[in-house]
Image 1 (cartoon, rainbow, N blue to C red):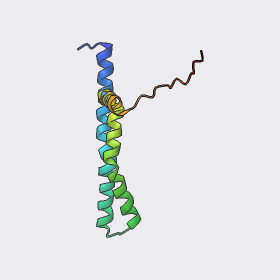
Image 2 (image 1 turned 180 degrees about the horizontal axis):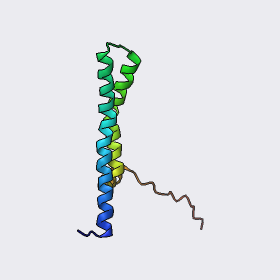
Image 3 (image 1 turned 90 degrees about the horizontal axis):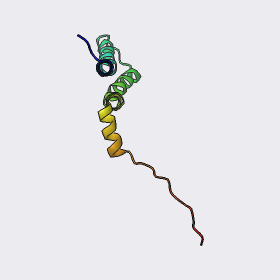
Image 4 (image 1 turned 90 degrees about the vertical axis):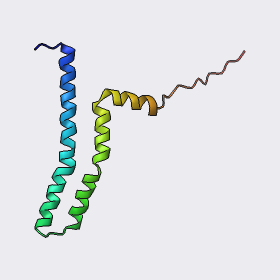
Length: 97
């Protein structure tokens, strides 16, 4: 099977995006949950560790949203066209006649 250079580049970018979208929940949800379960089985109650674990899990939505905007150009273009305000230079020149 032969692919054009553009198709190959787009496929690589897409696969990179998919890999990161899989990796983010693993890092932000699975690893803290496993460590929380390990603390629970040892009957260890470290409040600071519990707080840190839950704060890490709670950042999943924000980080996933930012990753989606960074990785996928259509989402980035849509959000920048609807939510970013273009700054126009102000012409402060005074005409004296």
